[in-house]
Image (cartoon, rainbow, N blue to C red):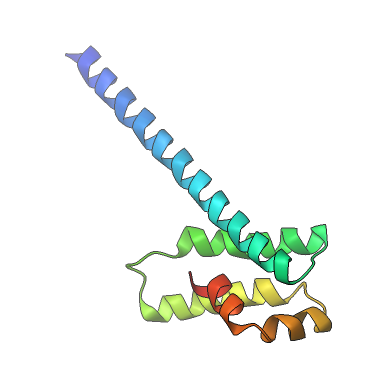
Amino acid sequence: MKKFIALFFMIVSFSVAAHAQDRQKEIAKKVQNDITALTTYIPLSDEQKVQIEKGLVMKHQNLSPDLSEGRKKELVKVVEHYLRAPLTPAQLQKLDANPQLVKRLLSE
């Protein structure tokens, strides 16, 4: 009986670990798509990409359908800070000229 219980917990732990790995891959793919969309419009240095990626990873990890409106607004503010902080004024001006891209990077 103890062996069956141990086997059950091993199976459950492996399935949970596999699900977590799938989620990380999904997040990485979404972040890469966002970075690609941004870099096709605004050229970024490697350092800028790294700083912006941090905010986008945080966005995709925390954004869920059951998140309250207040928390979504706070998340958007934080992600917007990560998005705008490393950019130069010329890059910010170009980004602000494309509100669809900004909306995509902040909310989806």
